[in-house]
Image (cartoon, rainbow, N blue to C red; front, side, top):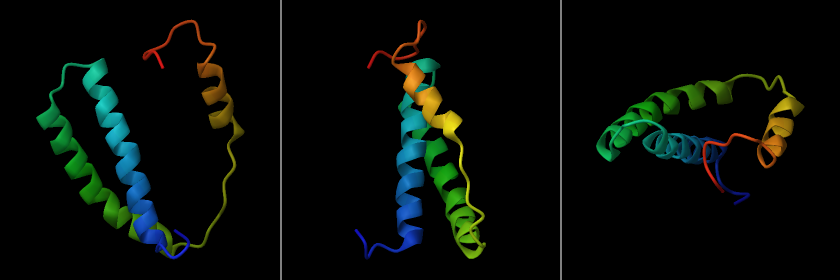
Length: 84
């Protein structure tokens, strides 16, 4: 994996993330599999160029511990969208 180009890793991450969101949307709202696949395809086509643009920029760095805290709170939430 160390030899994997950054652009390919970014696209794989984007695909995994958008696929997960579209799969969740089928459970949360009335949307079919074909519609989800169309959304996935259009989104990934747009994200490819955005990933390439992002890789040409100087890294600014970021840190947001609230994302991790929110993820940890999910296990003890009183109202949950999905049972995991």
